Length: 294
Image (cartoon, rainbow, N blue to C red):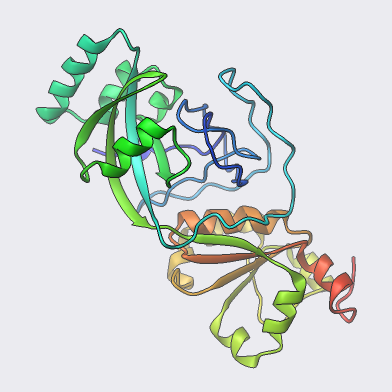
């Protein structure tokens, strides 16, 4: 049974292959399966009845498993985090040492009798994700070590399967799958062209995550203000107020806060999310001098 207590708190993952930046919403113990991302962190997956967490920019410490340090976060997100043509899977696992094969087989037998893998992970796993019931969150191809990725992406839904990596023996379970989403930067020049089309403002979903006092100084037409500091109010209702299948554009002052929210929107099932690179400041200085600079 997947319990709310077992959902992952986002944070550093230790062997993540992708260098795409992800977001820090809270602390999360490092997981052995991912390589380091460029700034802390895997967003919390969307599960019904699970209240989203307020994003934070505080980087988490790197696991001693990692042989290099993580670069400082940048406000710009220039790479696409998904092509839209693949899929993402929600995975939980447990890890035991390579010489603990007997224990692994015993645990595998217990899962075949109906014991929940998350309960076994809490008790027996040596991966730090054990504190979250072994939950690794939503992953896509290219993020996991090869052996684990091959086993996970070929595993039948909800079936516990076994695999071996350089870290030991794993029992893993794919709990859900979904179409891979897209997140990329949009340059001020690109947004200006779109803004000149009246239908764009009507059809696209435009979100400004700045605070009300900032919006009073400078704003763009069509953007709905959802202050990041009020995340606890609007976050739980985001999928009822916005359509996850529509193109969604997010803006702030310099592009950092909006990137946080854009990444979080992905975890809530939004398929195509665009972050205004450099924020409204870049828009004002590069393409529209009528917008005040503050």
